[in-house]
Image 1 (cartoon, helix red, strand yellow):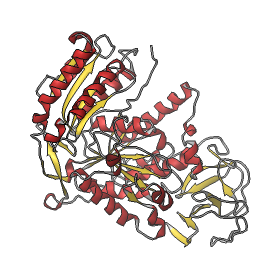
Image 2 (cartoon, helix red, strand yellow):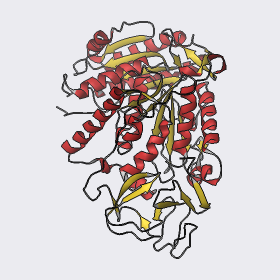
Image 3 (tube, one colour):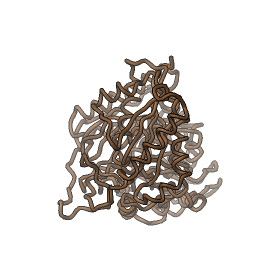
Image 4 (cartoon, helix red, strand yellow):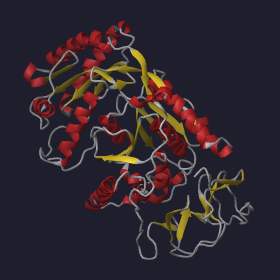
Length: 516
């Protein structure tokens, strides 16, 4: 996109020579003459689109040189293009893509080992590297959520953490599921992977897993499935086994006190940037997302991959309509086909629940200028940069491949990020145009503003402003700025969301299937 972007003036932006729309960079009132040679005939809000030439009924509407929808009726030059005149279906009611598997999977220009970027991380006994050093309290079921919170509160009130400055805190990971589910079903498998993935995430120096005892998700079965043994950094117990609520809390507090000096032995050391696993997220997207922050984050992801690291693109509903751009970059047809399998699953899933893929974008996305899921997806996919797609994972599966990978998740940010962290992500970058209020524990979240107006309004929440890209800063320069911040945050610098205290309530495992 950066190669084809032109700036006719400070008020409008054409993204590709083949486009039949332009983007408004300011509110355009009726009668304004634009450099595209058209007169605005209906007010166009900032971040929204207007036609630059006549568009016939049923004709494709192009942005980024790609189809974002089809005209419901004839659209005149200078007319505002949005939900009232742009829909998902074409003349034949369908959108056809050429998937061209592996056609554009060009190997990245890898940086030599002795020239790679580094950061200060926590090397774990299994060789993995954390960017934070938390003690986690995981809960097998909602019924054990309260005791987990009480354990964490007791530790935090005691002041004992002051004696362990290398420990970032004690987190209770509470949720609303763990029982009343089919033990053979997809939802149960997802939940089990999520629990194990958080336990194993390198940003945890130690973990407790606490349960009620009679729930569907049995702790002992999980330990057996994954070959887990209790150690000085991993302990489990249930309320029913120990004899009640207070005994459970007292047990947990004592176990954490024993774990703290063990977890504190970990000290930051210089490690290769290849140890970073970056979760790519966007939320509260707007008309600027696919123009500024998302492609800039894509540049940062490319730099990380060239340094031997891993970048995880997710949110399957938000690559819908852009999946053909990813299958071209797949390293093999099998990888591309696996991505399409997940797309088909989502089409079936939304159909079963009497929904449709175009239920995403949200009302806020539309107010910000996004019209269809096709438009949103084209911008969202830009977070993934340009390097080959090396693997596709199901929700919360352990990510083992290096390079650019995809994980199947919903578009709802907390649920999506939970899957990525369970997969092993030790750092996260989150683009937002409307101003999403989000943080993540145990994985630090860097917030990237897509437009300067929102950044000025919500500067206490945003780490980097990408809105200045439309003012002349190059996407490549901004991508390097993001990558440099990734290294600093991975080394311990606190993000805005960490400073505000976000992250205790953002553990949201994906619930799939019937509640029994």
